[in-house]
Length: 125
Image 1 (cartoon, rainbow, N blue to C red):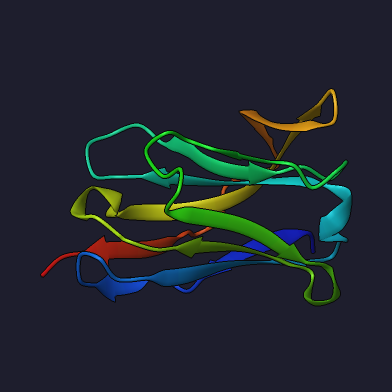
Image 2: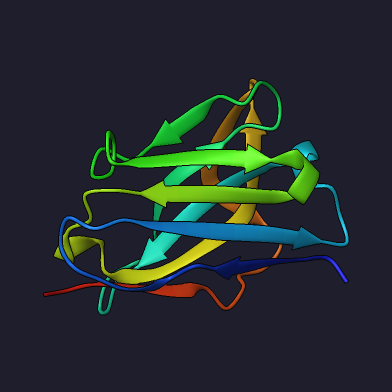
């Protein structure tokens, strides 16, 4: 079965850190561009970051630039999202998904496949 499973969420205080994992089963992750998305209560899902399958280039939304880092560990077939200096507005359910590769760059205009369960991140004191 081809699927991505998110994990690593939790409750953290403002300024804290979490590392989210996106583990693939049934396919090789490094052959696909992977994106992280999030959806806060009452808001639309938004793209947070992605990493290209082509050259490993990355993209970050302005709201997380300088605080979040996306990376992939090919041997573990996993993509990570390291989140530092977390803010209450980062509270959301986080999802990973295969995304488009356009001119060698990852592109989060659409996902390939379906959404997983996601992992809840809550930033609160």
